[in-house]
Amino acid sequence: MPVVRVVVLSDTHAPRRWKGCPPAVATRLRRADLILHAGDVCTADVLAELAAFAPVRVVAGNNDGAEIAAWGATRALRLDLDGLPVAMVHDAGPKTGRLARLHRRFPEARLVVFGHSHLPLDEHDDHVRIINPGSPTDRRRQPRGTIALLDVDGGRLTRARIVPVS
View 1 (cartoon, one colour):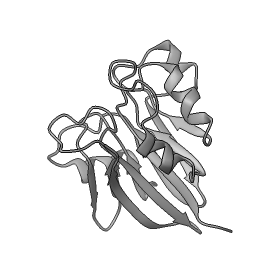
View 2 (cartoon, rainbow, N blue to C red):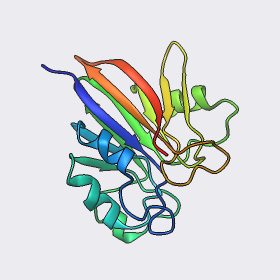
View 3 (cartoon, rainbow, N blue to C red):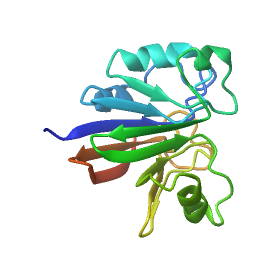
View 4 (cartoon, rainbow, N blue to C red):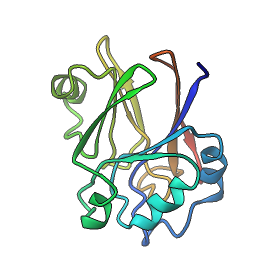
């Protein structure tokens, strides 16, 4: 089976921040097999735009309402990604103890994706890897907007990286 390419976004905050898919994001989306959005989409137009590139899975963020829930967004999501157990949530809580807390919350997951802080993060221990893609459109204190790119092959996360898109 070929490598599954996943693009991970969070905190697009449309229409205030996301005015349409940024060109650098679209370039990455063209090669995606799956898109994960870790919440704070804010308008379903973003999800429709993303779905034109690849299937989208989304969790609800603290700024998401009924329009995002209508896309199937729940507060937490568990999925099997080519044999890799993955969980996704918007708010992973405080930085202190985050790895252990997410492992306790999702003990089966080898990868947990989250958003909320807008701060890109890729961290792991012996049990779980956690990734926050940052935000492509609301970078806050970061020098550039970011997304995450994942390659999954036969149940293994073979490559993960956070890339600038603005």
